[in-house]
Length: 61
Image (cartoon, rainbow, N blue to C red; front, side):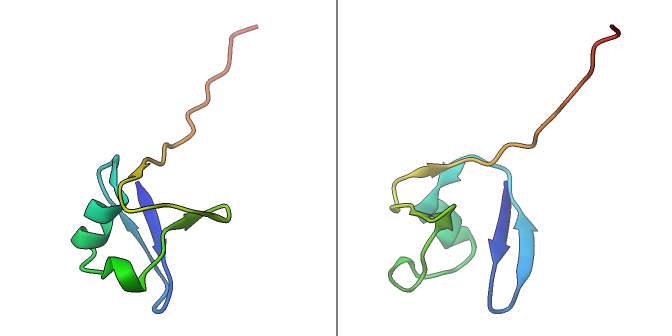
């Protein structure tokens, strides 16, 4: 799972999926002072977050 952090800006990668609470704990971030948002949606601490890579392949036709 890729995680984009701001202030300071950085991108980290973790083996996923995991709950938001576990992710914040691994990042040593306090849940009360940090939000987890994707496409404008706020995720609660017990939500399971998973980000998958897109894998494409073509056919021979």
